[in-house]
Length: 136
Image 1 (cartoon, rainbow, N blue to C red):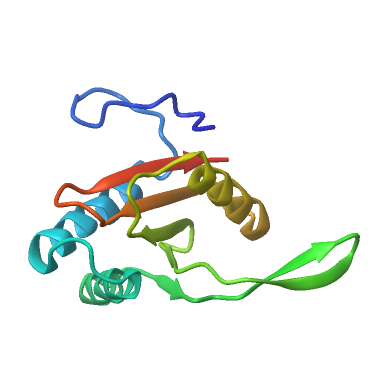
Image 2: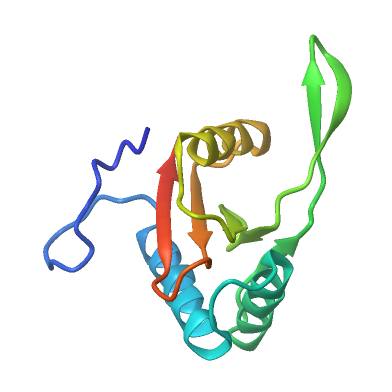
């Protein structure tokens, strides 16, 4: 799933992660939000808090951007991701017990629909932020 082979972001050294600086920045913002607001609230609260930080830090983002979903060349619906940061990273905010293959599979579909390469699943359910970086 994650072709970056589960890197250890705590260690120094050369890294070939795509969009590494961008995803680290987003995760840092998620920690700020969790530390200030707390855990277990509605997903929209976390989404809007991240939007506030993106604005304060002049980071390009899209909130609730619409993407068409096609089946055999016919549009059959739309996909609306929570956030796209830096124009290149899908940010999916969750308040769930734990991130499972279900959320990972959803993110892979989101990446395919948007034609982006990197997604972050951020889980604000617990006092400790749970996150996963998914690369298509």
